[in-house]
Image (cartoon, rainbow, N blue to C red; front, side, top):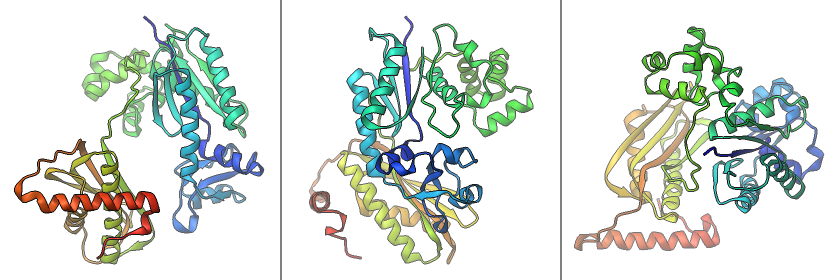
Length: 387
């Protein structure tokens, strides 16, 4: 039985939220992100800014070169999260089959709803616009893959390049492959820069070109990814809506305003990051076995190292000590660092089997829980660990 999957994408989300707070920004070229003097990047940009070439993830200094009158707005992530929750609440009001894939995107399975899909989509767009003052684009198809690409097609086909597109694209059942065929190959899931370059070498430029290649040849060229490429190019995607997602990793990272050589500063940063990672683990009643360090040098070379512990942990000190060891194993004395980060993976429920010799660690754990509660109630600065 054919499904009906709706994909919703909030247009230029951060910028749209900022416009609700400051209507004077509407129609102007502006970007949400960091200062160019502090190596800031564009987190989101208005459609007026996009019209002159500004893009997300672009260095803010480059964005200013493209658009000299660009207005820079600092990000307010708590505000964006609040608006996201309000949108997702509306989606859950329609159906329990909602899969949120980012702060501004979600899939809905509307197969069992009586109203026509187009009417559901238009009503949803109007509700979000009228009550939250946010623009959105929607794609509808028989599966997640085609629905998401439909949203992208709708956004790109808009003639109003300086305004939100409010796209709505519906792909009828049975027409998935026909809809995908003329689109660029790199719009297909699984086609990153390397795969795209290899496809171009083979004379494959569109999704239809991929669909016309023998599946076996694609498997020979790209391994199992080749099989997925062929199936996706046919418009085949059987993945269900996942209403709950498993946490796979928790991490923190920081890009310094100025390259850091001082080891104490680096260790202080690792301490703060480890504390936050540990706090998030405990808050969600999770623990992890693998500690990962991410570090970027001044030439933008980025490396990562990891260590697997004998047992899972949610302890700040253990995360910190492991991260410092990893840093010292790769960093030369006085070597400048541009970015540093700590993460924990291999996550699951904490296993705590208290033995006679674990009394001290259990006391330490209870103390940490009290600290967490105090910081949650009065703020992070209410209590600090001594150096």
